[in-house]
Amino acid sequence: MQCRDFRDIADSYLGDELLVETNHEVFRHLESCADCRRELEARREVRARLRSAFKQSIKMRPRDEFIENLQAQLRSTAHGGAKKSPVLNRRRWLAIAACLVVAVAVGMLGGKFRNATLTDAPQTAVRDEDGQTSAGQPPLLNAAQNGAQTDMGATTLLAGMTHDAVGDHRDCAVDYRLAETPISLAEAGEKFDRAYIGISEAVMSKRAANPADVEFVEAHSCIFNGRRFAHVVLKQKGRLVSLLVTDLEYSEARAERLDRTDVKEQVIACAQLEGYQVSCFETPRHAVFVVSELSEVDNLTLARAVAPSVYEHLTRAEGRA
Amino acid sequence: MFERNRQATGAGEWTTFEAEAMPHLHGLYRVAMWLVRDRSEAEDLVQETFIQALQSFHRYEKGTNCRAWLVTIMYHTNSKRRRAASTLKLVADVEERIAETVAFEPPTPQGLTEAEVLNALERIPRTFQEVVVLSDVEDMTYKEIAEALAIPVGTVMSRLHRGRKLLRAELSSYAHEHGIGTEAAGGQEAATPLAG
Image (cartoon, rainbow over all chains, first blue to last red; front, side, top):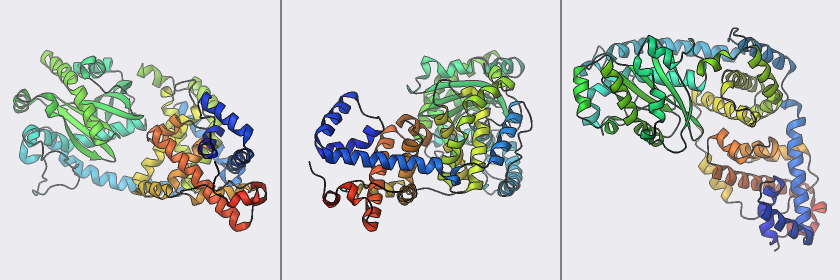
């Protein structure tokens, strides 16, 4: 080993990140090289100073009052107490107030979309009462390219439900702060929709051809903004992914359209919202969303992988209904 | 399973959470302060992180590194907050190109103070600061850092390598300007490009 080689890996040596064989080479070099021993000592000292600077700095220590308040709040949350924070600062309250104002405004716009989602009538899908394209609509990434496959039925589906799907992914899978406690898929299947039973098995079935690194996290049924979802939480590349299934009002036109199209071709990257990628497809009675922070391609690939088995499961259940 | 996990949040869950997660509060706060550079913001970030961690505690795998798990939640929370504030961070590529320009390494100076090391760290691009802090201060592994920052392990390794190199370059430049550590580093050697 030359001095240059040693200095290239000296930090990894200090961090105990090298293979045993490489460590032996380092030992041998250090035995015969005073300069590198000195260099190693200097780097060790820099690292120690850095750690010490962080760990001793008063500026980087939390206030006692903050620690006490946080512990009290966490204890209260754990015991089912109020989740509102007693230690939120003024800036945070102002931010929340601003968000509420925006939420009310978006909600007023969203009401128009929700009315539009329960029909396949194209003229109501993307335009408001004055015939103007609404600002609240998520961007339709692939609508133009997929024109034949995605027709106005799928577009209609996007307009109202994507916000709810993204909201559910954010509040349930990522932040875990839903207003209403989720229930098991079995219970939701009994009470609301038989198709929810077995949905996680369909997602994870061999037929789904998921990418190898997809992991199952959990499955349940939850409600966001009044809409019930079957929610399967997955993980890929360290990111949480939600597969969300919700009911659609049956439409003969949609059923006929879907009959003519291969399910994989129906899956589209339908929106980018709040930094999340959304892919979606339909069955005659259900809408399915895949929401994540993966790249658009990865999110769409995963949605296309699960689509055939999920579609088969749902349509079979719909046939029984 | 889901129901059982959710209902488990209570006295027993809190005891486990308190034992596993709360000892990392000081470490989390340090990382938060480094991330946001403001006490009030750091308190908000740590508070939000711990609340989310408690509510997702059923997802924590016992026996794994709890601090790394908490740091991952904190980075995720922070990136959402940044997104919400519409502060785009598009400088990583530029920073990495700048880092590539550090061609050779002078010997690392000795005898520097903690404040001087910290100041030098602050002068390197933030992309590299964060991996150096998570690795060399918080002892997280490459894989844990990769998960926290949502980047590939290879990127962590290259950023860490470049980050440490940049830090040493800053320290050498500072030491040279202030006549520090040249004796310990061996006078003539300090100004000589690497042998070997």
